[in-house]
Image 1 (tube, one colour):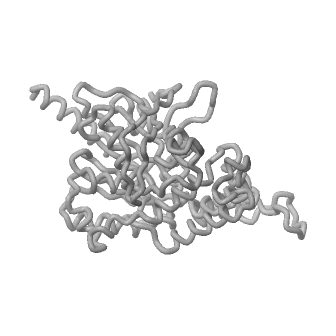
Image 2 (image 1 turned 135 degrees about the vertical axis):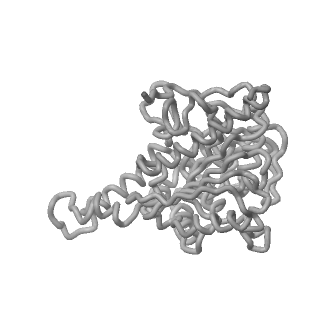
Image 3 (image 1 turned 90 degrees about the vertical axis):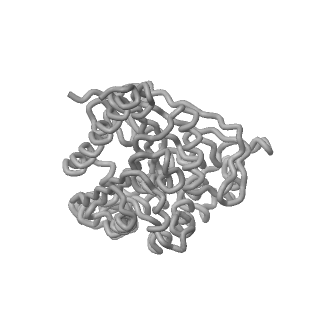
Length: 387
């Protein structure tokens, strides 16, 4: 029987210690918004960190008071679900530079008393992981039982395994890549140009101008969403179906797929109220992610100090981060004789598959999480002097 997490309340950690960032900039202080689910066991060996993707946030499961929308991975986190909150203490924070409670471009710069806007420093995956490690220390957790993430979240998992090998026992990397391809960087640049050329962008000072670059945000989201779906999925869902059953020979929306993309774009720019400067920062952080660059462009060297056990998952129709990109990670780990499991899951949903129900995916995921639970229990028994 699977129950629900129910109502959750976000928390906030204020960090007064300055954060020295990879870019050379310094954040004098910052806030991290986060949520937790489940309870820590006595020796704090059952904590799992979830890292979110580009448009995600810390609201990964459950729902807020008075709202019906559930967290973005609610199907996989909760009592009786693959990440069982009766067994694990689950944590997810909103990345720095975000727009859902953590310090970002829409926050007030304490040095000026004004909104950061475009003055917010460029943030990288290493910066996110460093701030997440500060949260780990705040929660009194010696090491994560696992760090888990899909897409951009999976890149953070890799960075965790490289930068903090003693603080992560298992790394689960889903639908990710060791760095972006030229094509992916190009997609991000087109999305950024859509935002930055919107007349309402005001060189990033749209909050001060009292505007929102909704048109640019909507176009960026349309482009992004297009890359998250597979051709097969779009074909089976929409095909060439017409909204009105006939061609009107004009430039209004005629095909159902056009209507769907416009809806997704408008929802992102209005109802979700995503900050445009945050979108720019997140895509740049994706572009910059390349841990092998610090190790003579050798991913095997980059992962040589990683001590975590790994589960790598890819999806057959994910053309944005194809299985070949996961194979690169697998090879680098095998070069280091790492403890690694790999699954290539058949799915028609493209890149979005890591968020959606799939029996094979859930089976692999649940089996691996059960392994982590067993190890956590054994660690607790050992510490308490049990057999």
